[in-house]
Amino acid sequence: MASILRAFERGAEELTATEVSRRTGLPASTCHRIMRSLAEEGVLEIGEGHRYHVGLWLWEVAAHAPRSGGVQQAALPFMQDLMDITGHPVHLAVREGSQAVFIERMSHWRARNSRPYIGSHYPLHLTSVGLMLLAHAPVETQEDYLSGRLERRTPLTITSPQELRRMLASIRTRGFAVSDRQVVMDAISVAAPIRDTHGQVIAALSVNTPLGSLKEQTMAHAVQTTALAITRSMALNVQMNR
Image 1 (cartoon, rainbow, N blue to C red):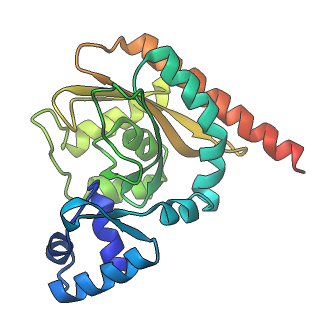
Image 2 (cartoon, rainbow, N blue to C red):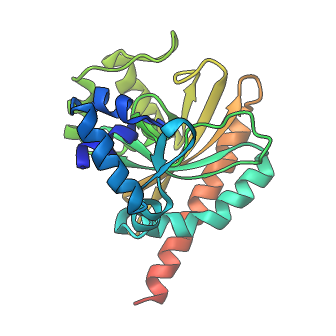
């Protein structure tokens, strides 16, 4: 069951049982049977063309995860404000191993950039939130990541470990991260860190903009200010609950 659910980790919104079979290596008949059972339980839902997507029940359970639920709830009103101010989609992500997992998203219904979806997983070096999370990960984690295969999505994707090390150092100094057409060629994003009461980076917040719309310093200031407000709100909640 776990391997089937992990097939949806790669940012796919909908998959057929046959596609899940190819991704997992499990027999197609096994995937059909298990996925039908998961749909009956509400873990998956079936759309048109017998394509499956993650069900609301699973998101409801995930929202209670200690590492994502608290920051998600604290971030929501601030994400709304940031979206209204910038007019662009806003994303919230946490690190899960070598992936950035998007746990919340807000956008206007007319927004051109519809991805990443909630639940999408991206390698850390591709997105601005991933770069921010990697920059503040333990040194051993960073080196393990940089010594592995670095996926290239566009001609501008940075896959040089040396260049990425310089970029991560710059992110820690500047306090924000930029992903410039590293995932797709028509979008740029800016991210800032969200910290716990011990000062550790536990999540990252980003604004995604179409190519040509980004005023880097202005957008970075807006994202940093919002991330700091979320950090302070979480700290206040901790103090009030003591």
